[in-house]
Amino acid sequence: MAQIMIKNVRKDFGTFTAVKSSTFTIEDGEFFMLLGPSGCGKTTTLRMMAGLELPTSGEIYIDGEEVGMKPASQRDIAFVFQMFALYPHMNVGKNISYPLVSQGMPRAQVKKKVAEVAEILGITDILHRPVGGLSGGDRQRVALGRAIVRDPKAFFMDEPLGALDAEFRERMSEELRALHDRMGATTVYVTHDQLEAMQMGDKIVVMNHGVVEQFGRPQEIYDWPSTMFVAGFLGSPAMNFLEFEGALDTNQTSIHIHGSDFSIPPLLEGARGKLALGVRPEHVRFSDSSSYKGEVLATEYLGTTQIVTIATPNGTIKSRMSAAQPVTVGEMPGLEFDSRTLSIFNVETGQALL
Ligand code: ATP
Image (cartoon, rainbow, N blue to C red; front, side, top):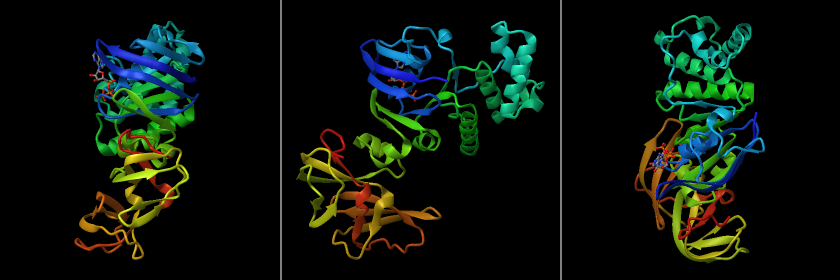
């Protein structure tokens, strides 16, 4: 097991900076997600931790030891690739035992280790099968077996489920998480899928254009996004932004938008100019007592819930509400936002004020 610390790590490819000064810590035993859109620098960050890429500057510590310039082979970690490349001419057992055999481990010990790993993964009965005819799930288990058989300090996974269809992906993500909980090894996992990150991760780093926007527990960053980018990237539909011109001080307890007052949580900093109220769709409700009105433009039925698109004086927003609630296109309901969960942003800087 291992704690991993990234301190002011930067990576340039020629004149292009793929990762700008990044700092965060992955605690021992955590299932840690690197999340962000394509090209944001998450794979490069993972490869630097694993020793497959050298940082241009900054430090990387594994269990307190600075490893930034050490090659992957000296970091005692296992990298699980997306394609799960297995050795096609070897059976399942041989595929799993390969890393141990190539280290020169005695045969009896190898056999014992492979049996243990097969037991953990539930593949004891296929140890003698060739890998060619295996199902996708079993191939994945074999690839994982090969990674965990060495008892590495940490696992690094780059979109390991990316190539799988939705149903299978969900099953494998549950298995991966359960495996982690049994073994307790630090795992760093790259994904662009915010739902996967929220479901599987103990902690998440959200990256954008090579910059760490925020890191924390899934609920923390969902409820208290520190930037508009994070607020918009997590959640589906995304957080609504109601833009307004205003001036806010730290002692402010409410904001005034289009003739209506909305209570707000305490602000960490004041701001003036172009601001935005951030409201999650599940926190937009209809209310007869509210004078802030919108027009229902469309409804989308999703079974237990529905997504309602509403034109407001501050732009179009979406609400997620019970499908049992009657909603008619064209109606003009009063709107209420749950004040405990509002975010407020400075639109110019993209930073949250609370
Ligand atoms: P994706 O999910 O698409 O892989 P990512 O967030 O993992 O995206 P990276 O693979 O880390 O992003 O790439 C970040 C940026 O660095 C991209 O613009 C990419 O084109 C660039 N990049 C990555 N590797 C190299 C390289 N070896 N040489 C030049 N540019 C690179």
